[in-house]
Length: 163
Image (cartoon, rainbow, N blue to C red; front, side, top):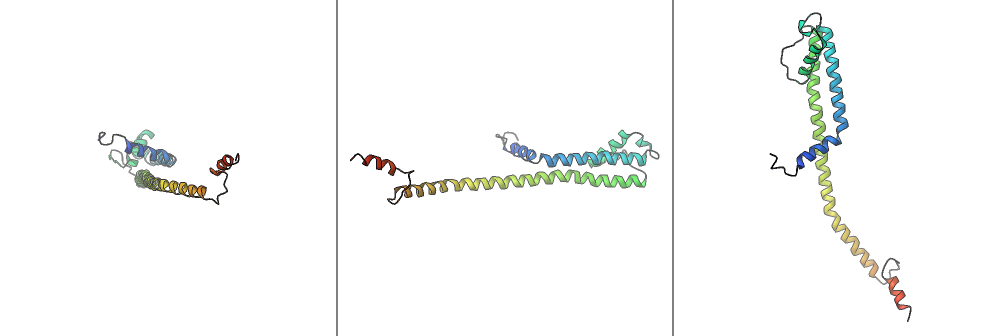
């Protein structure tokens, strides 16, 4: 796989997209972390008196990580209705937690591809535009009516003056 992508263009593109959208990705990570801590604490409060599987906050935090990552081992499940409501909210939060960075990176890739194509199009038009400007300047400088001091006519006038 690495032989196919020798110049690492794909990895450079991924790195540039992640770097360009690092603020959004860090914000998503921060919100996900807060959701994990908050939902784990609420499940711990709801389940600590009725469910022996949630004896410590670390047990609730383990449940939160497994639920937010949408793995769902099933070793710890809430038994009370408030705990089940929080668990369903946590599962939905886990789905959106993984969908948000995918959307951010997808739009970043689309913007990079669009920017690359726009740049390619501008480069293709740059050389003909420069030639047109050069030709117009040469035409202007060569006409007898040109009174620009930026042409060779100034030197022509100094050469003709000794006569």
